Length: 118
Image 1 (cartoon, helix red, strand yellow):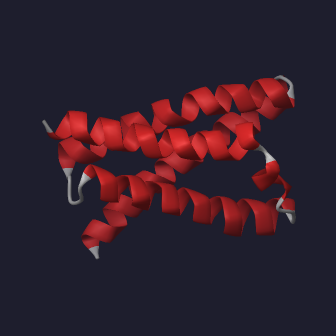
Image 2 (cartoon, rainbow, N blue to C red):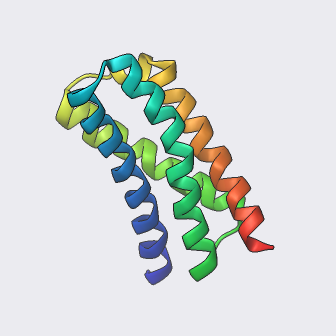
């Protein structure tokens, strides 16, 4: 249970920081600029979270970690953001706002995991 909690906490930290980019960005700039900043920031954030996870814990392989981090992120976006906050699935129609960051989060997690494990 401790290992699952540590992995989940790391994923939630990454997801929360990405959410902060969106929340702050929408207040200070356009939607398009916010989504671009989020697409750039998401892999950086998850790269740093992954680095911390592998330096301190490394309970899973880089590939499994990427699946877990992305799965938790998608679950939070689906169940909390889409269903509860927005009451709409429109966010999943945005390639720049959702799908590109998901791909970059997955990629950054694998790459940083492989780099850090060495």
